[in-house]
Image 1 (cartoon, rainbow, N blue to C red):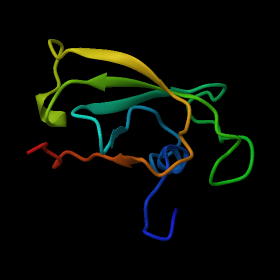
Image 2: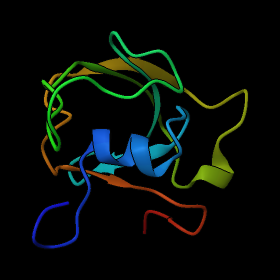
Image 3: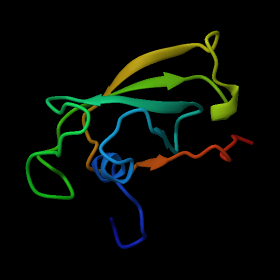
Length: 101
């Protein structure tokens, strides 16, 4: 956690109980990302390396073009992206109450 209380993607993985599927966003995105996996880490396994960066493994995210989690369904457009800087504090959690205005 940084001094402002922000969590990076790896810390969010721990907060999610070592589970994938949690949602994130980055302030420049007009979309919502769902973390698919962290390279080299099986779901449920702990990350290698020291917190908070854990050797900064790549993260794959399904980026949905939706205004909220509730808007996501099987017809929602998406693309898969790779995040190379998951240890930064650019990517913040999205909960069910989040909505782009």
